[in-house]
Length: 307
Ligand code: SF4
Picture (cartoon, rainbow, N blue to C red):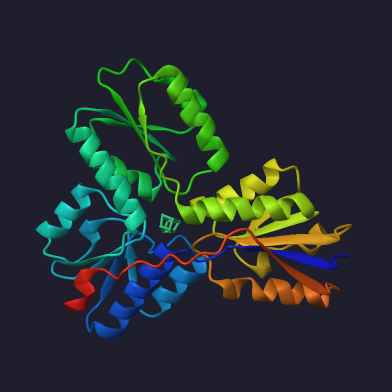
């Protein structure tokens, strides 16, 4: 049975998630009327359920928000079309988009203005990708892997490449290599963020030494799912769970060392019950495996100071 936990660091909340949660938290504390959130504020079931319990109303369409209401845009960002619809409905908007996502929007907008065709490496349908694509919908193609690159037709304009912030570092390198092979003159921005990069480096370290890796994070959390995939790609059994209740104790049979980590939208408190449970099963050592120190902080949105 398990005797050691390797605890990845960094893990859990990134600066963009902390900021988005703080924004919604403050608005719920100060606003009298109903507070809407366009899309899940961050992709974590526990966090979203907590806000729902406090009265936040989550919607996926601006049309579902009564005119003049308060709304918070999620950390994943929104397209200019959504901003426009919100204006038309006279909504009081606080934008909690992560500044690193905003940077990708600005790159995309500028590239379109400068006459490029844009390849957006990312997962079609993800909130962040929908928002970024909306900056230049007629010029942007989403590519998710090498096969998508091969399937592209000829492009008429010079090519500019941007990426979703939460992709697999290794898969994205391969996709970008494939793009460079087809479009040698392409200008490439790799926008995978520091938090995604650090968490993947940390899960690789623990996966090298663990008999089993557990990744805490919701199924719709892109960066959590990537951590799970990175661990599996290292050849170690790995599971993604929302919390302790989803762990099957049978996974621990024959396992001495358990690697534990969490996606960027996951509160650390979700890991403690898993650690306590493993201690009850005989774990005597919890070893942090630190690959990077994170000191990043983002300023709160200016609109908040005007409340
Ligand atoms: Fe921002 Fe990266 Fe966190 Fe996404 S994962 S909110 S891009 S810091």
